[in-house]
Image 1 (cartoon, rainbow, N blue to C red):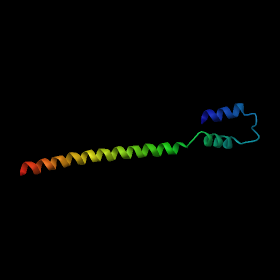
Image 2 (tube, one colour):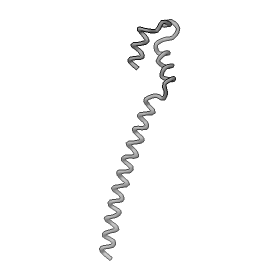
Image 3 (cartoon, one colour):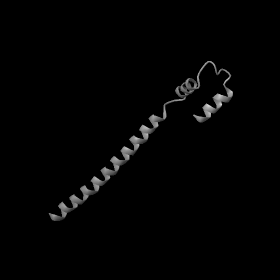
Image 4 (cartoon, rainbow, N blue to C red):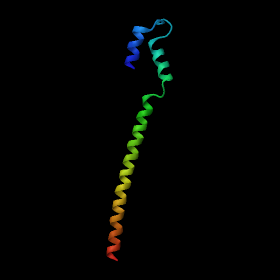
Length: 73
């Protein structure tokens, strides 16, 4: 975004038609989703990783309990 701002100030021949903020907003709309979406994807991915880790822990404990039951019988 900084490059866009710098380019705007040096190369915009129509600086009186749109404000810098309007141009930045239009460019952001044209080039896809906001970075907030990427953050939520990262957050979701880390939550999935934590769930998988907990599931693995539960599976280990479950195997230990089954072994104790088998050994005691």
